[in-house]
Image (cartoon, rainbow over all chains, first blue to last red):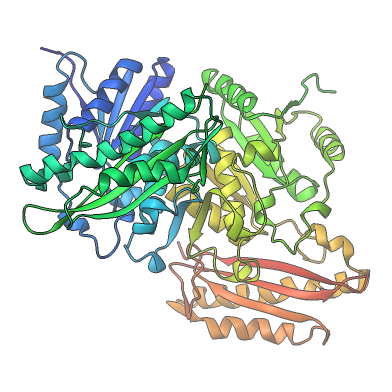
Length: 314
Length: 314
C-alpha cells in the first residue's frame, strides 16, 4: 500500500502554489484534463503521465462553455467520489499527486451562459481546424474546449498535457492552440483504447445492445481497410493516393452496415489543419475520421466516432 | 554611465530561457509591450516598471492582426535603432534588462493575413467590453490586441504588465482577458501623459497645426467638466448621477469647437464591462470617453481619443 495521498485542490491560488513548489524543486508536471466520469481511457492517459513526469495532476471539471443550450449540461454525470476512488484503486503504487477540481465561478470570472450570443468575457477560437467534422456538428464545442484548455494550462503550467487520439479533432485543435498562443507545454496524444472487437472505447458504448456493439466493429474495420490501402500504395512507391480510393475502400465495408445506421461523414483530412484532401500526399499523411449514428438499447440514437491516422512516409 | 547592457532577444526560446533564469534567481519581471516608435508615454511605463520590478522587459512588435486590410500595416513606423537608443538615453542609471523583438512567423505559427474571414489558428476574443466605443470603429482591433497580448504574456510570464490609461478600452480588454484566461500577472494601468494644455499625448499629435493643437485642449476640458460635476454630486451625498447630466456638461464645452470638427462619440460606460450607463452609481464609478475628428496640417483628418475615470466612492 502506498503512503502517499492525493491532494485535492479547489482554487486557482492553491493550484499555483502547488505548481510553484514543483518548479522550485525542479519536478516536472504532467497534466490530464478531464470532465470526470473517469473510465479506462482516462486511466491510460494518467498511467502515461505518471510514467513520464515527476508529478501528475488530473483535473475534473464539467466545462459549461462546450455545451450547447440544447445539450443537457445538468445531466452530465458528476461522480467525484467514484472518480477519486478509481484513481486510488487503479494506481496503488504511484498515485496521482493532485486532483484539481475548479469551481465554475473561478474558471469563468465573467460568468458563463450557454447562448454564445449572450456570453461575455474572453474566449479562444481556433479558426480552420475547429470548423469541419465534429465542429460542423457542434458549432461552439471546440471554442469551449479551446477556452477551458487555455485557462487550465495557464493555471497548471504542465510540462506535458495528455489527450486521447479517440477525439482526433480535439487533439488537433489543442495542438494548434498551444502552438499559436505560445503555451509552453508538450501535447501528448495517446492511442485510442479499443474493445476486443476493435470498437473505440467511448462512455456511450454502455448504451449499446450486445448485438449493435458487435456490428459496430465495422466502423473500425472500414478505417483499417483504408489504412491497409494506404500502406500498400506507400510500399509500392506511389507519391500520393486519391482520397476517392480511400473512401471507396471504406464504403465497401460500410455498405454492409444495418440499413438503419446512418454514416454522418467519412473524411480524409490534412493531419495538422484538418482541411479536406483530394489526395493524400505520402510525405504528409492524413486523418481518416467518421461519425456513425446507431440505435441505442433504449430506442434512442448513439453517435459513435472513430478515426485512424495515415502516417507520413519517413 | 551604466555598465549594464540591454539584452536583445529575438526568439521565444531565448525569451523563455531568460525568464526562467529570473525565476530561479527569484527576480520579479515587469513587462511593457509596445509596437515600437517609442515616445514619452512608453518611457513613463518603462520608468514605473523599472521602479517596481527587479527586471524589466520591453517588447517591440508591430502586431499585424490588429490592423484591418484597409489600414496601412506596412506604413507603420519601424524604428528599432532609434527605439533602443531612446531607452538607453532615457534610463542611464537603471537600464531596461531585455528588449524582446519577436519575428512575425514565431508569433503567428499558423501564418497571418489581415482578412479575418481567411485567418487560421488561435485567436482570443473578449466579448462584451471590446465591442463598443473604439471596437465599433475598428471591429477586429481588440481581437488582435487580445490575441497578441495573450501570446506575449505566455512567453514573458511577467509579474506585472504595464499599459497607459490613454487607451482606456484596451486596458479594460486586457484586464478582462487576464482575469478570464487565468493569466498569472498584474495589469498596471498608468495615467495618461498630457501636453501642457491638457491634450492627451498621442503620436498623432505631431500631425496637428499649432492652432488645432491649441483648440484641442477643449477635448480634455469637456471631460474635466464632467468629472467636476460628478465630484460635486458625490460630495453632496447623491447616490447616482444621470448620464444625461454628465453628457450635457461635456456638450456645453464641445459646442464651442470649430464647426468642422466631428465628435464621433462621447460615452458614459461601466468601468469594468464598458456597458453604456443611463446613470452613474457612485459606488461603481464610470469611464467617460470620447473620439473627435479634427483637421490635420496636411488637410487629412486626425482622430483624437481621450478619457477620464469617475472613481467610485470609497
